[in-house]
Length: 117
Image (cartoon, rainbow, N blue to C red; front, side, top):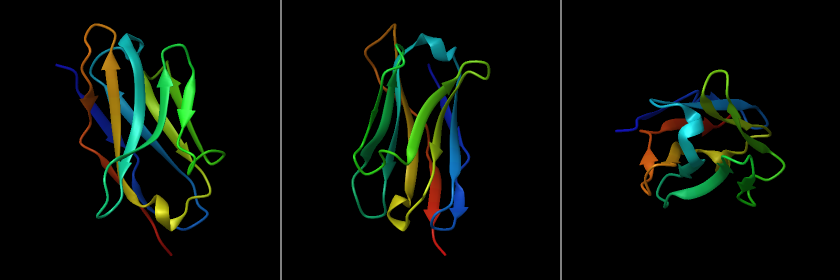
């Protein structure tokens, strides 16, 4: 059973920055791909960004040029650097991962990001 645990959420002012981290219970190199999703209040969960084990990344149009998804191999964590945050970025952010060994998606419990002055 793979476990994913997010951290780094919090309250930040518009225009500010925040970095989310996701720690996996297994070596992060064992994932085919990983991603960040978010669920704004009263809305459905949506894709934020994904990264393949090849390093290829994909971003939602709403976060391109502001967010960066990357893997810290030394710490074995998936990260999301969020810059120029906007109130509409307020959401519960989830880490997702699909292992190489099984076609099954694992999810973290979520970390809250609130952008407000």
